[in-house]
Image (tube, helix red, strand yellow):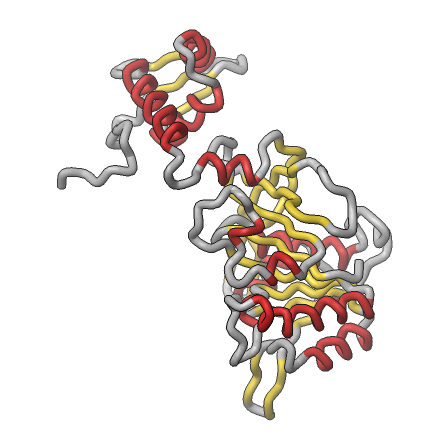
Length: 330
C-alpha cells in the first residue's frame, strides 16, 4: 500500500492482464490481504488500448465491478482529450485519487506518460517524474502500478531489462517480472518478484495462464483474455531468461542435441511418452530439456485409452529440423 510498483515483461506476457485482474479483484473485495471483503475504487490510465473496445470487455471477463473502475483522461478543452503527463498532471492525479478514495492506480504503460522534454534514458530526468509519483502514492495510501516493457536485451537480470533509464527499476519499491514458459503446457507463464523494498523477499514464483473469454456486446460476442493464477511455479522468470539468453552456446547445444535425438527416436513411428522419457534419461538427456525439444519441434501428444498414458509422434505436416533458428535454403 502507498507505493509505486512495476509489473514488467515482454510484449504479450500478460502484465497488462495482471493489472486488469488487480482492478477486478479490488473492485469486488476479493483480493487477498487487507482489503479482503472490502470492495475498493480503482483507476485505470490507458495509453495504448481502447477503453471501449479492449479494456471494458477484459474487465467484464475478469468480473470487475465497473461502477468502481474509473477511467482517467485529461480534458484539454471541450473537444480534446489527452492522456496523463508526468509530472505536469501530478496535482490533478492526486486530487482524483483523494476525492474518489482510490486504492489502486494502473498506468499502462508508465513510460508513455513521461512528459515531453524528459529524456527517458537519463535517470535524473526520469526521476523528476517518478519521484513525485511515488510521493503521491505514499501520501494517499494508493498503490500505483506502472506497467513496463522489457527491452531486447539478453540479460538474465529481469529488472535490468526494463526499457528506459535505471529509474524505472530503482524508484518503484517492488518489481514483478512476467514471462512465457515454453516448457509449461497450454501456454503457461510465470510471474516472479524480483524486487521488494517494503515486504518479504524470497516469495515463490507463481504460474498463470491467459484464458480465452467470450463477452457479449451490442455488436455480438467479443473474444478476449482472462488472467488466472494456477499455483506456484518451480521455475522463475530469471530461469526462463537465462535459458533464452543469446550466446548461451551450451544451452543451445543441449537443445539441438535433444531435438535431433527426438527426431531420430520418433522417425516414422509413434511411442509412449513414458518410454521416450525413460530412454532419453538413459542417454543423458534431462526430462526438462526433452520437453523443450518436443515443444520446439511441435511433437504431437495424444492421450490413449482410459488411462493417463500419452503417445508422442511427429507432425507429418510440419517441416522438422534440429536447427529451427537457421534460415531454409529456399
